[in-house]
Length: 245
Image (cartoon, rainbow, N blue to C red; front, side, top):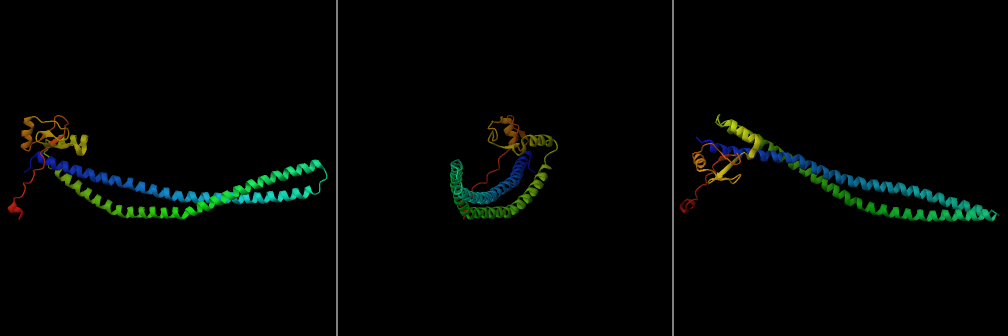
């Protein structure tokens, strides 16, 4: 029967395995959130461009109405100008006509610029829609792939937890409190392999007596970092030429 040191090697493997599975499961919601944020950004880009075009059209329409009103006002002033006899009234009408013509020229320029901007923004819509469609495809593909991946990870996680619980039940009663304390404080990193006389977690050299205990497959704790030590996985001897033929 394997001793405590070998048992803790297997516990360390299972603890890290379960932790890594949990990390992968925890990463899925973050990835999903990132994909949804990317989709929301692409959708907003299309809405913003469409809204900008809509506002430009409304503004242009309002300015076209104002320009028409200015033209009608100029026509009325010109009719009045032809009927007045007073120089003061004539000068006043000239000033109003000139003012309205200047305003009309400015409005025409603003309308033209707005129409050019509408054309430019409208021309961008197909590219924005294409980019949005690509993002939607990416998100749909991610959801399809991650659904299978998540189910597989959950199955592996359940199996890993069951295996871990089974091996933990084999920890001798007198060592269980120490194991639980170590796992509680250091988690999956609460154990470490000892290579030669060195703790691979903190690179501290063990005293000879500790090395002897570890070779005997007994319970050993690193005096420096407090991790439960275990011997490395035994290496398999190389096959001879006759065995490989």
